[in-house]
Amino acid sequence: MTKRRDKRLMGQAYWLALWNHGLTGNNPSVGCVIVDAHGTVVGEGVTAEGGRPHAEQIALDEAGEKARGGTAYVTLEPCRERSTGEDACSKRLTEAGIARVVCAVADKHPKGAGGFAALRAAGIPVLVGIKKHQIAPLYEDFFVQHG
Ligand SMILES: [Zn+2]
Image (cartoon, protein in one colour):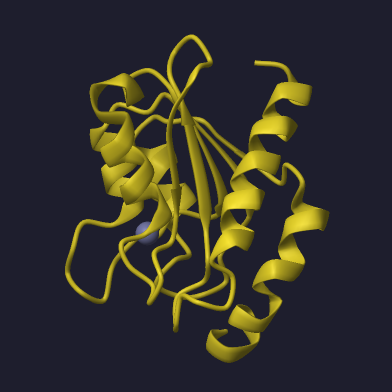
């Protein structure tokens, strides 16, 4: 994967995030694109209206087994725990066999923060900061309200 390709796929995740921006209640609108081991897009998701399911969950469901060995592009740090008690996205990504995670913005919210650590603890390399300057403004309000 080249950096240019990482940026382009993150741009696609950003576009998805914009789609539901302002419609996801207390949750931020996140975009997620999953490519398989060959770099083909196999799953796309945006946080659903009202805030759930989360983007990663939708994209992983769409990708199914094709996610194994692939890369997930996510605009915001995947959550570490869920207030609903459902599996967190970091756990879902790990269990789906994702081999690499590329993220734009780290989550400052206590429930979300720690997702990178959980992924790395599972042996998944995480690249943070791709297109951060473009995408971070999308989450400023969310961090102010919940930070
Ligand atoms: Zn999540």
